[in-house]
Amino acid sequence: MILTRAEIARSIDSGDIVIEPFDPRRISPNAYDWRLGDTIRVCESELDAAHSTEFEERTIPPDGMVLLPGRLYLGVTHERTHSERFAQMINGDRTVGALGIWVHVSAPLGHVGHAIRWTLEIRVVRPVRIYPGMTFGKIIFLKTLGAEASYQNMGRKYTRTSGIDTSRLYEELA
Image: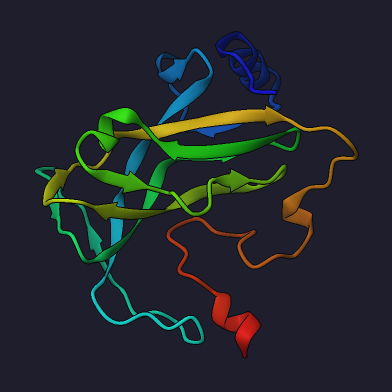
């Protein structure tokens, strides 16, 4: 079940959902409109699932940065989100999709208890300029059924992230 605008606002007021920084004007009928952070990692080399990936980290300047096709970009949300009661699902939205930007297609689920600034996989169809703090997508909150278990307490690879996380699949393949 997806939370409505009123239920998202109520859950933020009660502390069941945490969004930092929070702007009540960004709550839409069934989601929160999240923004792009100001840091991006760029990978132009060959990728290998069995090895750590080399990235160049850049700050997105106020006048923007042009993203180019054929590169892997990892960005980060401006907002940090957390809920011990609801699962979260993050997506790009139509406004960035219409610019040919594909955002976070592979891993949209944030488990109950996940407390993060989201790492974003970003690809573009054509060269496009992006800006720090621009609206980049929507996050929805989902009511779960069954016994709740906090992801933060499970000791998984990505529980304590505060910035951009690269793939750590190589840890499983070692």
